[in-house]
Length: 222
Length: 306
Image 1 (tube, each protein chain N blue to C red):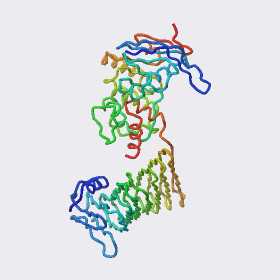
Image 2: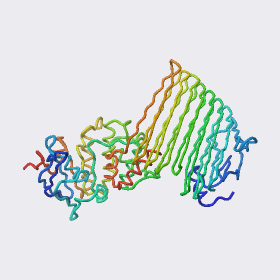
Image 3: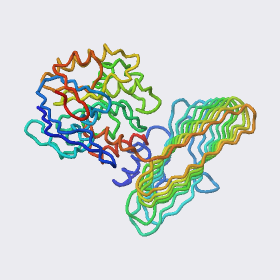
Image 4: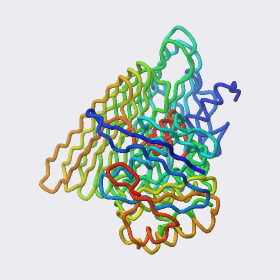
């Protein structure tokens, strides 16, 4: 389903090597956990798959298609979905419009909202009546933002081929880790053909995975 | 009343209506009042002394609206219009104004609207004013002056919006507030090209236990310039809040000048101002949901000014 081939990534003015010769094949329907010490390059790898960071060299294939030079938008339209480790705050986008964009992949300049999308908030334990009209900004706590971020990924799940979660357990506040695990299991059960990639340090998430890849100093550890 | 297609489009944009609305209204098109109607509770009259209207709103008015849109589609037309509103004690009314200019000609089109509101006791008033410009003509200039005098125990909400297409605007809003009353002023302005916006909002709180909330949101693109000045004067035991948020793009300029003037020991006044570009990660987040970069920017601007 997804293949990354000989990825190398150097970042910053000093061209520090973050990833070196990383090659991984991900199968359809597979739940893969990627773990490793801080600074091992896990999040960089996730961002490279989404197109948020350009690799210095190497290739990425989605099925037979080379997506290495595609933009973030183009990858999203092909079914790559990504949950940020630190959710983005912004004035001007309500929770309702964020979910609407996520569910449709289209802008919602007319403010119309499909009521069916409210269920994605319920899936992360938030009351739609309370949250839909709120802006995704600093008035929300870090934990609320994290759950909304995960809800936005659930909203895209039906059209997703690759679902990437970058440390979903970080900052989930009162919403328990168990609920997050249940949601991930539900995703895996419902979307059997989708590949789920979770960057995590959490033992329970690692236990859930079909396979765990360990990164160390920017390389896949044998 | 006959409107052409462009005039209908402008009417829809500034007043949210397709034609003659229910209830009281006045349509001003190219410098003339072309259609007017009163209702049982709202009397709309041409004023005898100068251009404009006198609108009398009875204390029996409940959940009723009066529409007074202005459309200018003739290039070179310049006018000053004075509309006075007399709102009796106990009235609950929504006033929908708004002005749209369509100018494809070589001469400037200018509408200066001076609106004065006399709000009684125990009133609930919502005033909606939208401004819009269309056409590639020399200048679409709108200069609204809004004065609001509020007595006691009343609630007033002003929604002031410059949608787009206005080349130059000088906006002056002044409110005098009595006791146990509150006023909310929401202003939204969009500018692009070399357009200029100069907005000044002054609220004097003269009675005890009153509140004022001023929220301005601005988006400035290209080489446009906007200046927002707000001034809350607390002459009494009162609470006041002023907030200016602006998105800055390209080579635009936004100047925010909030001012608080507390003249009573029990006046509690706060202001906030934030000006900045759209963060790259905000655009990236929306791109991960499938939008192209231009769509992501439009989504953020649209929501910011919604």
